[in-house]
Length: 222
Image 1 (cartoon, helix red, strand yellow):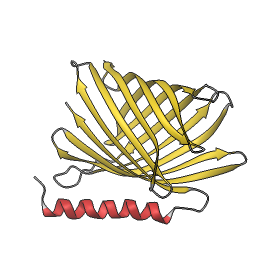
Image 2 (cartoon, one colour):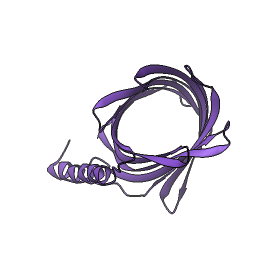
Image 3 (cartoon, rainbow, N blue to C red):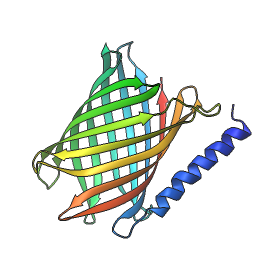
């Protein structure tokens, strides 16, 4: 059940995340909105499947330019602190007024631990980008996340920060960084949500281009 204090606290957090997004929308980049819905279900104690859909709106949130579908298989039977998985992602993205497709299989390893009751996770991802009308290449991504040991209200609101780096094996360079600041919470027993601000910096020639993104996620777990 939702209570008035839950709505009040949640409204304050949404306002702060949205305010940060608008304040940092610089001229050299774009303000965007990313929306993700996903479902995961257990096959048994060690295996589970996941399915994800994501939509990205650019030009100040007015133009749908990107969509992906991602299907994954995750194994957690090696150790309590380690999840490994294999995924396939199919992408449609608008580039130069044309819709381009990409096939992107990826391998994932997520290491989790606690220190002073803080929750830490470090996810490594190796992906192969098979792109339409463009060169194919391998890329490595690493995402580091910290969650404090505090949850607020009956919604179990939990804050987090994260940073993700992108390494291009062809160019042998780190050419993208994503910084996240947000919170997740429980709507119902099997329905969880996430609201975040994302600052993405991508190398473009000799310069770096910034995107400032308001993101929302809904996840159903069975």
